[in-house]
Amino acid sequence: MWKYAPLLPVERKENIVSLGERITPLVELPTFARDIGLPLLRMKDEGQLPTGSFKARGLAMAVSKAKELGVKKICLPSAGNAAGAASAYAARAGLEAYIFLPEDTPQINIKESIVCGARVELVKGNISDAGKRMNELRTWNKDWFDVSTLKEPYRLEGKKTMGYELAEQYDYELPDVIVYPTGGGTGLIGMWKAFEEMQQLGWIGEKRPRMVSVQSAGCAPIVRAFQEGKGESQFWEDAATVASGLRVPKAFADHLILKVLKESNGFAVAVSEDEIVGTVREIAQREGMFMCPEGAAGFAALRHLLSAGFVSDEDRVLVFNTAAGMKYPQVV
Ligand SMILES: *Cc1c(COP(=O)(O)O)cnc(C)c1O
Image (cartoon, rainbow, N blue to C red; front, side, top):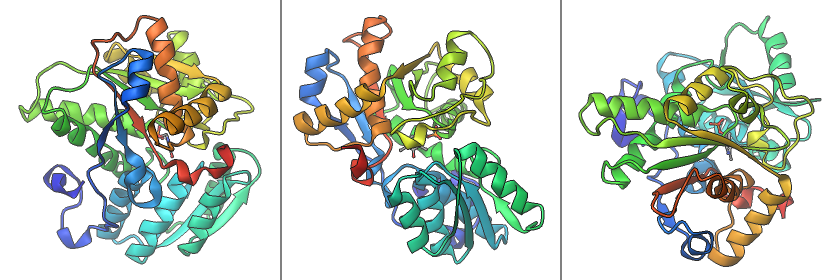
């Protein structure tokens, strides 16, 4: 991602904190794609990034910029993978990390944070409760730099590199539809920003992909707001899903997510927990790819998009697998 450095906020090369981020591949799923009738389907496999999820992009950027700004301590609440990525990049940069996780966060995310030396507190409830607990402690820990989703500008800048990469991989003819499993929405908003920048640079024209947010029926505040035509979401009570990255009952930047969906003539879909787990198995068995439940939610959504007539066999459809399935042994 650092090849796009002139378009990124880190000013001095020596401040880049890297664990070897790579350009993630576009992968075909020939059997699955043929079966559902979307021959031009591709997956961008973000599970191949350091720490096994695309949270690496955002946290690599946030930690690098924090280092450049002279920050010594970072803090964040997380639903799982952001904790691991923040802890890893903080360790690499020599920063202290204070992490707040729901107590039922997958064990792997707790362990990957602790093994990297982060201070971890488990909080009863969901990511919103974890955020409240963190903010209590911040009142007397004024030197903690808050890297919560979209409360600082840099994670978004890291995630926007997905937009640059995929544009390059599609030879600057952006795909027709991008399907994004949405929690806090950083990637969706980040890619949209990247497309705008690329147009200003003259790299692409005005044409944009139709952007699709996918959520679990167990926590679908963006889908509900989209269906009701609202510009903001409502807090989702009793949020529960195996796709832990999607368990965000009220995204801080919900208005920006909904704006992108609207501007792009996009769509929002909720899929059931059974569909998510079923799709993890289906794609593993037919394609040999063990994807994360959030990614599987995106593929499960394709059947809904087909029956709604939102996509057709002529569309170049891109779905993000946002983490490695191997981080989710409990799902299967
Ligand atoms: C965080 C996360 C998401 C959601 O990403 P946002 O940019 O916050 O919407 C999706 N999948 C996985 C695996 C995640 O960790």
